[in-house]
Image 1 (cartoon, rainbow, N blue to C red):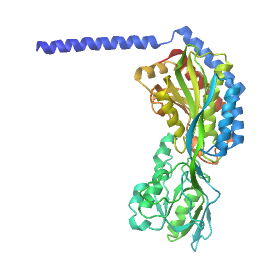
Image 2 (image 1 turned 180 degrees about the vertical axis):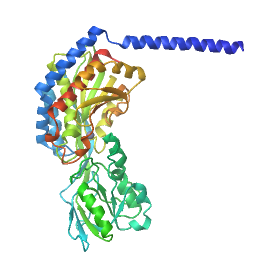
Image 3 (image 1 turned 135 degrees about the vertical axis):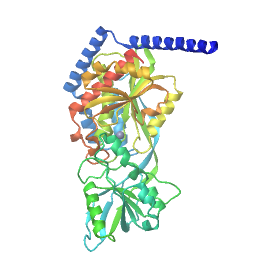
Image 4 (image 1 turned 90 degrees about the vertical axis):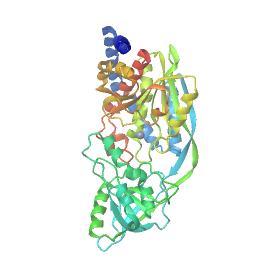
Length: 470
Ligand SMILES: [Zn+2]
């Protein structure tokens, strides 16, 4: 009994010690009223500067003239050179290219589909777009009856019924889900694994209803997977409006046949690069804050929201600190990662570099959710660091940031395993899936003001991390 009391008492003391040290830590994390005020004034100045200058938006116009930046393509190399030169022009303290070998898939010219056999609908054309990584069809195309399913599970259960047929995955993104990234995540298994499951039951090709939130006939592409144990069959998105049509047509004429022609192919891996530039810290040069996005895009539109403008926000955030004559204590490094879309090779390469180098990583911020109005930062870190960042909300709120929460960051920065905090910059998501991975993703759908506000959010967060630490 006595022993038990002693243990209880020790535990009580220990608990007291924990709570008291906890509360002093929280207390010391609060900025003094003067400091808070000076940061708030700085934030307001930053906002005015980006909104008036619109320098990053000017860069986006130049980038969109180069065109889309699919890994391994000539245009992606032009964009890499362009970014390297731009960082040098901005007077960053160091600028370098980090070599990375990337997959090299080319779409080709033919992406045709039509109803080739049906009394009712003969020769009706369907708008399709190959998924990244898909194999080609034979020159004369692939012809088969269409069998519609709503899920991978339904495809698995088709058994012999799927033999020689084209499996049509027809489950749209759930419009009732508030967060469009979540809705996308719940629909994308059809694109990722659709060809594998269809091939297992003997299908010859796959069509997938375009994963999008708007109503049009512009198909959205994206990466798809194969499994070595089953045949590789062609796989393409079908425009949303044509998916509606095809779904109706197969119900009225279950034996109609569709012919698909694709001539895409995978070439040997190509030499490419991450583009890196930094402002070297004035007091702690080896203490690094990474900001970045992915420099590759799909080959549709010009990858304006995915991930041109968001990458440029991170690049401009360094330039903005220079323009405002701010000298960060820690190093702020912009990394434009190559090949996020179909391989993540750039993120993986930088992850290896960060694991083996002499730098310490305080934080890494990724911008890869479009360039819409700022909303928040999603953070992977310990509770105290999160709390410290949350104390900066009144400052960040000047750029329209409303919240800082625990959550995921981004595919590329998540490869920096030794960073104390990983952050994802989160703008509004309601319009992103209207254009993501499609020909709709062009300069005209980026609002200069929304993009520039995001630049100020990222610049301010990286500067606060540099000055205040975690
Ligand atoms: Zn992206």
